[in-house]
Image (cartoon, each protein chain N blue to C red):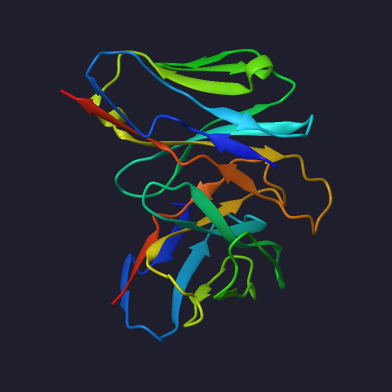
Length: 114
Length: 119
């Protein structure tokens, strides 16, 4: 079945460690996104990519990094520079390069910093 | 600036009741899209509907209906005869129309309304 796969589902990290969240899609979508969700909050955009080898910062990019070497993959690294990394992270894709289309979401990765 | 307000943080109803989730938005754009997404306990957001700013017709899909009113900048969502499976967090979102690659494409999400439907 086509869809978006995020891994790991749960991740624990010690302060000062970098961690990489995986996002893979087999929908052949051009655009991919990373969102952060905090309790009782909406989704906030971290990074997005409209095409391979190109990505743009979202509203809260500080302390995060991404790469888009392949169309189907858009990993997110949460670096030690991110002050408050404990959150639920959602990856999404879009068949279009703009946001007027429907977004397809993965099931999310919950990161807890100990 | 663009903004989406979902004033209802949590709503609890009994099965078979009708329930309306409110969404009020702010934008300076004349062309924009509005969305509703459902987030069940499993975590992934599921697309429910997209509406463009030129189409103010109300829409009905089974037990779901949407009321879009530009005059009040609202895009409300009604579930008729609610069921336990409707329990989820519902997000309203707004986007502007991005034509140029390289522009920041973004969906502005509201904070969500948690709906609990009790048997």
